[in-house]
Image 1 (spheres, rainbow, N blue to C red):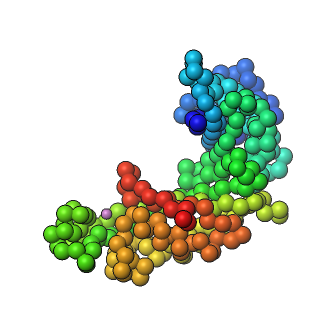
Image 2 (cartoon, protein in one colour):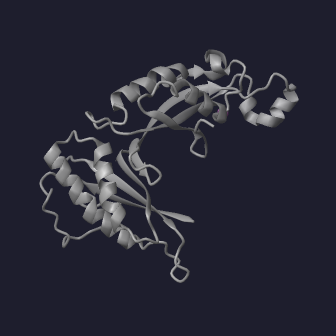
Image 3 (cartoon, rainbow, N blue to C red):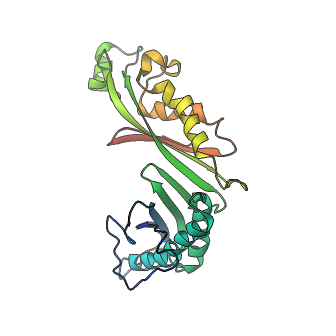
Length: 268
Ligand code: NI
């Protein structure tokens, strides 16, 4: 089973909503198409299909087909929906409607298994085939902290051998990137899985304020007797959030210690 993902990038301009001219040059470059005129929403839509590639072409699904489907069924619809329902339309509902329009259009050999709508570089919404009524909300956060990797039950020599420069007696720092995913059915009144201001406040108070600009070993009780490795940080963040994201449920916590090292925890 192969998963193939294609991303299209587009701007939503109130002036062209409902008047899309596909004879105009279409590109899927960095700026996307339609290009932004003035200051307008810039969205990225990622469709993932799954199946077995054709033995001759090696293609699971020609990306030209995906581009065409996404452009015909998602972009004009997004523009018309935003024009009709206002700029505060929930991303969850918009994504759900696009999902419903796309699913029947894909070839049986490459069904749609995941669709993601990126509304900012740090915020995205997703739907998967396992449960299309559920929407996943993923937001990125940042914090900076110091830590020292050290096990008191090991000798100094063993600690140095195991952790290398991460065993430096006075610690060292990282700019951590934290990604939290919650999932749920959109609220009937607000259309949101979890109100974004509440989600951000929650993560700020329960996680960022506890960890940011702290020495994890010294200042954070959870790490008093536990090495603050990136693996353990992911697990601790999960514990700080899991009981507090209702009515959504916590789905995944991912922590980047560097651009080259990250860990994730999904509760088990
Ligand atoms: Ni480190």
